Image 1 (tube, one colour):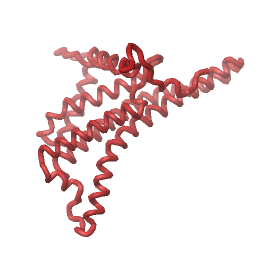
Image 2 (cartoon, helix red, strand yellow):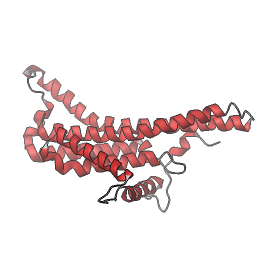
Image 3 (cartoon, one colour):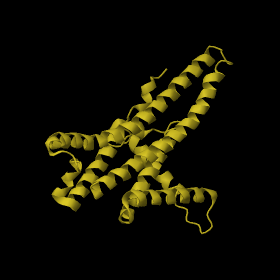
Image 4 (cartoon, one colour):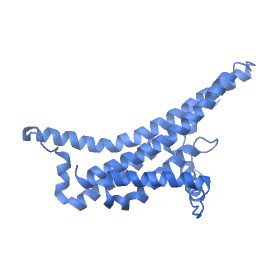
Length: 234
C-alpha cells in the first residue's frame, strides 16, 4: 500500500525542471481555454453560468477598487479561474493537485503581495509607508504599531498561501484515508461494511468541490482587498 503522502510527491518528467505539477498547470490552462472561450450571441447554459461569474467579479472589483480598478479585473478573474480549475481537476484520478503544495501557493501569494507593494510604492512613493501607521493612533505607539503592521503585511502572503494549501491537502488526505479504509474492508470480505466509507466519500467529493471553488474565491477576494488597501492607502 502506498503512503497517504505519496500523492503529493513532485516527480520530474521530461527534465528536472518539468515536473508533474508543471504538466498539471499546463493541462489546466488548456482546459480553461476550452471551457471559457465561448462567445455566442445566444449563450448556452454553461456560457450563462460563466457570464454570471463574470458579472459578479466585475461588481466585486468595482466595490473594492472603484471605477479605476477595472484594469485589475482580468488579473482577478484569471486568478479565480486558474485556481478553481486547478483545485477541481486535482480531484480527478491521476491528476496532480498543485495547490496542495505550500511551495506553489506560497510562491503565488508572495509574488502577488510583492507586486501590490511595488505598485503602491510607484504610485505613492514614500507616502505608501503611511499604510503601516494607522490614522489617529497615538504617536508614542508609532514604533510598535509600525512593526506590527509590517509583520501583518508580510503575513498576508503567508496566510493567503497557507490557507489554500491546507484546505486542499486536507481534503486529499481524507480521500486517501477513506479509500484505503474501504479497500481494506473489501479485501477482507466486509462488503456491506465497505459501503459506509464509500458513501462517505461521495459526500466528501461534493464537499471538496465546494471547498475548491470557495478557496479559489477567497484567494481572489483577498487579493482584491489587499489591492484596494495598498492602492488607496486605507
